[in-house]
Length: 208
Image (cartoon, rainbow, N blue to C red; front, side, top):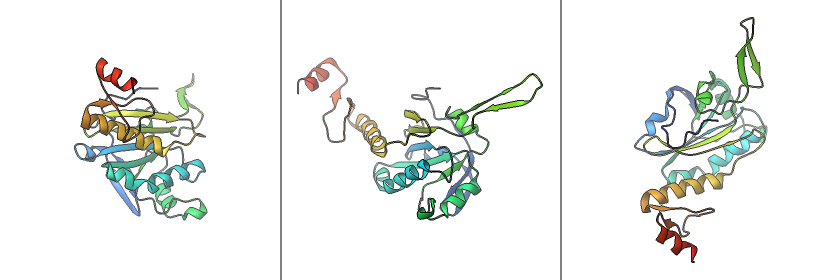
């Protein structure tokens, strides 16, 4: 897969749904210079693991907002599928109550640009398009900074749900580094000691 860390996040303009509203030209460019973005992909609407993730992002939305982070979801479903799922109660497998935007990548170009599109396609000897597997998105997640640069990415296979706590931890680590210039070691948590990016700082941290 492509490594997008350190590169500008691929741009797009697509339909999205927020609450009961269909947005015609949604783009992450609106957040540049204003907000960090957690942009995450999931395979399909009306499935099993996916709603657990979407509900957890909603439950922790306040924590993301405290950190000036916009949460945006995306799958290869249509805007009409997103809209219908958003109107379906949680007890019936829906995601009613989710308030952040869901992008409709029905042409699969966004998933392909972020290199999270499962399956594949080729042209056979007769010139026909041959598809292997399902052309849906893996569980990709990208943390994009205020300049529109990808600073973190993780991709899970479809059966494997992600960790909301790890997502928040990485946001905290990035913002700590930006504010203090200190790098964050393994399992660093907000409020823990970090280290300066020089030999003296590392030695001081390791001696604790």
